[in-house]
Image (cartoon, rainbow, N blue to C red; front, side, top):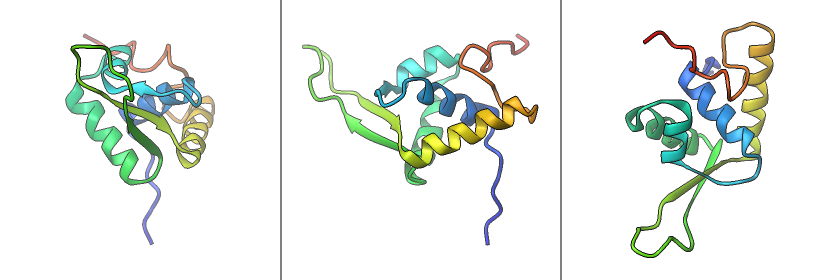
Length: 109
């Protein structure tokens, strides 16, 4: 039986950001910008969460002219539950980011 692991701060931040959009779709690039994380961090997290059934993906249906379609991401029901668990852990002081504004924003530079 696999042990449930606490998500990394980066994974918790991605979950929190996606939860803040509700049922809306997010672009990976926008998540990178919002979270201040590199694509090499965010996209593997999105892929892993998709493989676990916590994030669903779709291609942009009508991209602006001159730009290719982009992948869109949003939480599944299981992902929304995980995001709620992460938020509850943060409120209980277990180290995960509490809100979108707090995620990774106060990292030392």
